[in-house]
Length: 55
Image 1 (cartoon, rainbow, N blue to C red):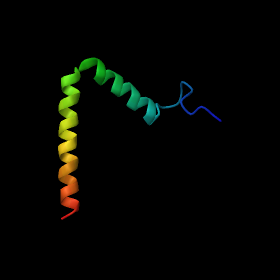
Image 2 (cartoon, one colour):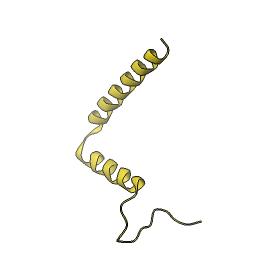
Image 3 (cartoon, one colour):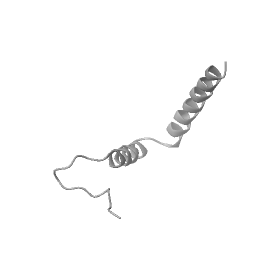
Image 4 (tube, rainbow, N blue to C red):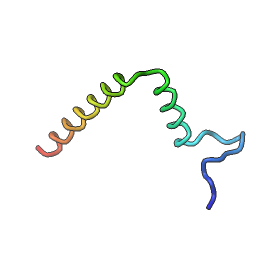
């Protein structure tokens, strides 16, 4: 099986690599409270969307 994570210097970054890089940077720059807050906001928004779809 080919390893799709490896790339030549001429290839663009994969979405997987970009997501990992962004996640690591975010984790380095923010504390646990930040992640708790965005998780709560995301959960509230998802619940709101679910309520609207069930109406």
